[in-house]
Amino acid sequence: MYIYPSSPESASSLQSEESAAIKIQAGFRGYRVRKQIHRSTKSSSQNSTSSHRRNQRQRSQNNALMENQGNTPRPNGGDAKANGENGGKSVEDRSATKIQAGFRGFLVRKQQKIAKDAAVKIQAGFRGFKARKELKQCEPIA
Image 1 (cartoon, helix red, strand yellow):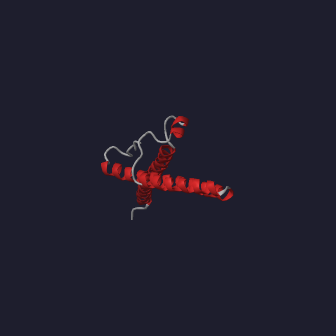
Image 2: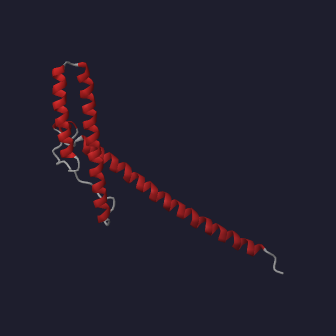
Image 3: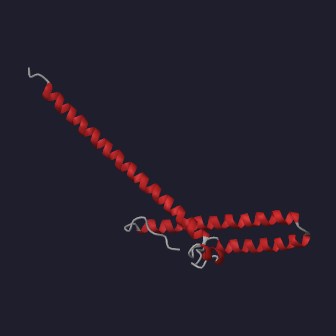
């Protein structure tokens, strides 16, 4: 997965964005595995002992999978099911893209607020200057 930089001149921010995306993806993968384990344990309590053993094997496989995927980025292959449904993008890729888009939107809104606040200060200063100038012209000369 390629992470688009927020600005071309910030190489260090690209590296920090990439490490942040990797951490987010690792967290999401862990959440997905824990959710799958929770579902399997819920169904195992309702099934017989043989299915319980099967779920234990599945849990151990999921734990091994979770350890392997913890901090390593996945190649573009991803899940076959996820690739077939949405133009070749896995759930993690779509989630990371959504998170990055939201964060970039936040940064843009923050910059716009800073620019707006600066413009308001400039305008207020100019209006004060203009008001003082008009007041000075209106005063009678003594």
